[in-house]
Length: 145
Image (cartoon, rainbow, N blue to C red; front, side, top):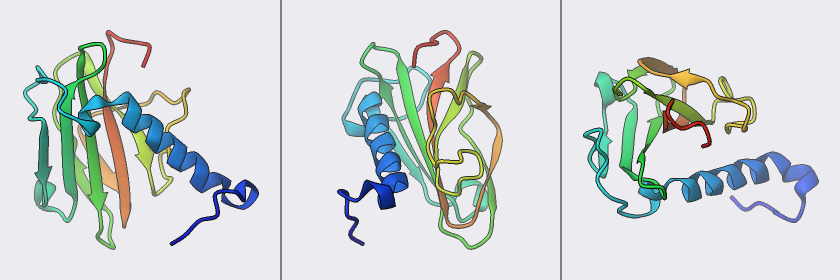
């Protein structure tokens, strides 16, 4: 559908979400282009259409960021009308997943991560019906991203 981007009083939420997704794309080279080998063993891009025998599709991008550090983005899509629980890709010590977007608004009230939100995710996560979650790799060795 079409959105009037000039009417920010009415469409502020959609504008802020879109801006956050554009910023996410710019922060993570691995989404946009081949960016080098990720030392954590993830391929450059992989897709699992039935993650953990659920209806959830996982798309994982991996590579290097602009500083040469490991980088990965995990997209989880639940098109099903029921909640689905899946396991996030395993990470070595010192790494965790940080939620960047949640279209169900369950974890992120605005749908996207604000700078002060730093909750760490590992293991299993429940996706709300018909929702999308995006996670990015985060290292406890780097505090600036």
